[in-house]
Image (tube, rainbow, N blue to C red; front, side, top):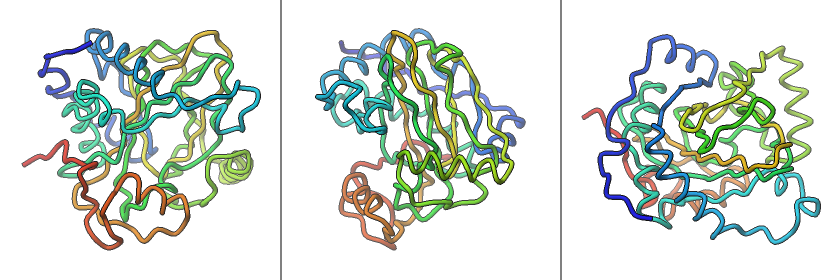
Length: 274
């Protein structure tokens, strides 16, 4: 399916002062109708088809580890499909990211489709940015369902204010991260927020250091979510301090070196106020 609707995602989404303040205080925010039904109607089919084509899982759910049960995860779809690139590189989404973080411009780190299969497992507590060799706290992820998700599947659950603590643990997404970070959240008395049911085209935005998890999928339908990760233009590459960050440096910042600008052909500037 092809689209020549180049106007899609080029207009702006008006944020309120309360939404911006809430994001900066809590490290997460829910925004309704970030994409229109028309846009979702076009891109859900494209993205779902590409995810199924690139799906690498060859074992049934019950034979996978915790991470494998959590979702089908396909990254950089924008490099596989020029039409999906219209979605991922959309100015509307990028401007929201820049406005929430209060920066002059943003680049793409990468996109990820996260499809939680019927009967799929929970996503353990974690911080996204333990994987990213980026020397900044100005990072943000847009998490957008492509289909309606019910209360029982719900949005992610966020630990409000946890982003202010920065790097809490290097533990990658696993049973161990779920146990230790759950204990951390509870010991700090952090408020846990889930936004519940969401419509296709709604979106949450959360900071790279915000602790979060997601429930399993007890329904008989796929939970289809598309995510895009942004960081502030001008960000430098951090010295990788873990294998996870070394791997990400090679995969998502090819040719970049620690101390240099985080700019590669995979990291286009998608919004600038100037």
